Length: 373
Image 1 (cartoon, rainbow, N blue to C red):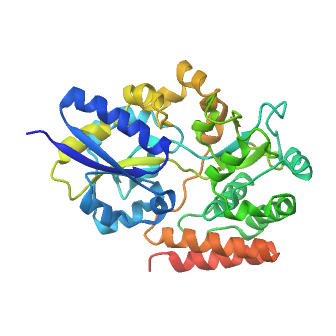
Image 2: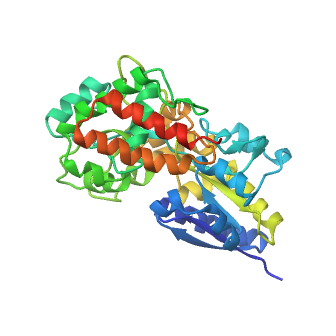
Image 3: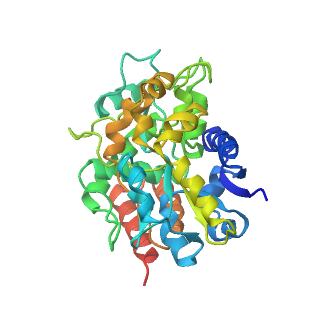
């Protein structure tokens, strides 16, 4: 009897196309078919994994969900004996970001963090530091996605780059002085940005920036999307680089993103699901069919591959230092609700011109409330 697995991923060519391509090859090899459904980016960040686990065998998740999903007991952990090649090939903290309470709950198939995007046809080089960013912003040439949760991701990155990454175990998430300085940096930039920034996620910013007549030539903090580094996707090809230096500090502390593939605890075909997940997260698939079909791999074998980099304008090598220094967000049960509430509160404070330290204090209060009793 032919086994057909059902998978759920996020609705973007980068999230769908590589999995469909790999599933086609996997069926040719093993006879196991995989039908992939997709959900919106907003659903991906908020829809309960527990409900998805009742309907799907394979689920693509992001790491801040792991505390919640382990409480709900909706995923199966991976067998540690089969994971060495993937663990050793992890780019930055992608692999350990799915490790929680001594078990591995997902395998990284897509690696991302906040990096810098720029227009090589408009600028001689990416912005080296925030002085350069502010100079470009004074000319109206800078954009920044601040739609929740991306405003909070920017605050995370700047706070960590200044030397005080968020304390994931609490009780205070942010150092008041350091995060206050990071928030002030965002406040200084705001008058030089298009007010639409509060309604834009990274995809919206990229779509604007990649048009021939776009004003923006630099986005200092934005989740990297390799799709926009390909020639011919849009009128203008975007370049990607490490985040700009801040007060002499290099590309450390960027808020990690990316996705991992997980196996539902409700599946009737656990072995088949594990076998595919292990293959698609491994070096062979990641630098081969996964990257070729438009994926943004999570394995170092792809990030270091000459052909993969050539097709993507050196996207991987140009942002690798930022990814290696990325910071893993909190993952406790209750974090996801905090992330949304904190992003909305931060934007309210930024738009109303509240004192930076008062905004940070309010975010710390929300974080304390989110921690398990």
